[in-house]
Amino acid sequence: MESWFTENQSEGVKFSIKVKNHIFSGKSNFQKIDVYDTDGFGTVLVIDDCIMCTEKDEFIYHEMITHIPMAVNPEIKNILIIGGGDGGAVRELIRYNTVESIDVVEIDELVVKVSKQYLTFTADSFSDKRVKVIINDGVNFVKKLDNEYDLIIIDSTDPIGPGEGLFTTDFYKDCYRALREEGILINQNESPYYINNAKEMIRAHQKQKSIFNISLLYQYMIPTYGSGYWFFGFSSKKFHPVNDIRKDRWSEFHLKTRYYNTDVHKAAFILPNYVKESLETGEYYFKQK
Amino acid sequence: MESWFTENQSEGVKFSIKVKNHIFSGKSNFQKIDVYDTDGFGTVLVIDDCIMCTEKDEFIYHEMITHIPMAVNPEIKNILIIGGGDGGAVRELIRYNTVESIDVVEIDELVVKVSKQYLTFTADSFSDKRVKVIINDGVNFVKKLDNEYDLIIIDSTDPIGPGEGLFTTDFYKDCYRALREEGILINQNESPYYINNAKEMIRAHQKQKSIFNISLLYQYMIPTYGSGYWFFGFSSKKFHPVNDIRKDRWSEFHLKTRYYNTDVHKAAFILPNYVKESLETGEYYFKQK
Image (cartoon, rainbow over the protein chains, first blue to last red):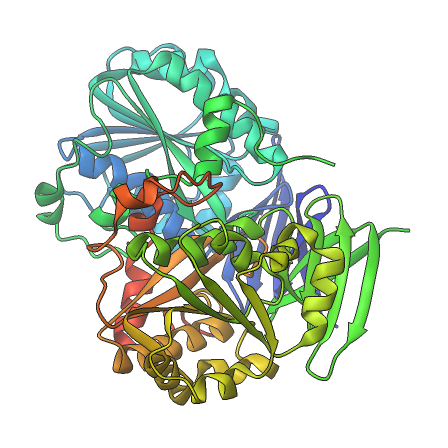
């Protein structure tokens, strides 16, 4: 008998992938966690019935959330990741020999545990000596910080459940204070196509713009997230993500990347009219019936 | 009872949308044609169980298939569209008062008929006086031509069924001959993510490169096609799609577009490493289990 995992990507939209084995299912205090083995996508991590990460295309997400800030400021030394319990962002960051410390503040210990067991392609990175995993609520963690990090990455789920506090103005203000003068904030910033994602995308961007000197969104194309068309936010006190890119310095790291390159970096900030318009007006672009 | 339309996007991958009404179902000599009314995507045209065009996002496809060549050569006057029986490409092209004629060679009369009845948002364009709809096989039609068009658009389905002949070397050679010295060929060039599409993408591109002086692929993000990440081919005898863009001249047309702008134009040709690599090696990028 065939077995399928189905995600409700939006009202009236379903995405289904064929499953070979349902290799883990568990519940933490925060969320439901499942791991599937599939022919089409390799190992797949699912949280609260949403695909978080597939072996096939997680590199797109993890390269774009890390190399963009690193190419803008290759002097980044101390990094805070909030969420990111799968280890994918860490894997990309430990490739920089200039990085000195990476603190991963993950609210859900079970995500880390499950990733270490089943998602070794991302979570093996946790064994690097510069990495410290702290099981804590990111919202509380940043409240006490002042001028401590060069880069904060909010590698979160959607703003439902434990991810909710990571989309608030107070939290972004705490991140601002936790960053040094040259600090950069990167956040998972949703998608413009389906209304549930688009409203959060607009809202989060408006909040960041009101706090940071520079705040822009950039796109990446990841087929296993609803619509395939997703965004990160780049906010900073000082650096412009495109004008200040240090292309030559970044090339000196000699990193072989599968998605990212410095041309893709610049192009990622160039948005289609419908996305620009919805960010300018603050309204969902498409008519709802 | 809920009703859903499901597309098998690849082996082990299904995409389903909730349907309000199944408003048309018919079979021509070439293919099965269905039209659905949906809350999420408006009217949806489906051919052989694949989504061809939805009211919500067809503008992405139709703007990118037309404005890219028009911005490179704003002097385009005589256009041939092969396929395109829904009228969406025509709708964008008749906005240029400089365009003198558009011949639409569609193999399947039923596509035109159904589009005129149910997809008025694209097919109303057929009433423009410069447009001639010719019911004929595009492969045969181009055999007789020499130096006749400034632009040929292959607005085809996948290379299965009636679309198959539109992906052959002989056909591309005929298109080359049918084009004038400043001619441009644009074709629906599939997608790099699922193996079924990726193999055709690579193959079609290799054929075009062997015939045209300039041949490059460009991307657009359309959520209702499998993976959401699709490509058109730009081939020409003379013009480079990025270096020869006539940004100022294009702006003088004062066209309000929903996806396309001249920055998106340039960015569309900047490809992630995995896509570049698969085009260079001629191999599907992802491991298959």
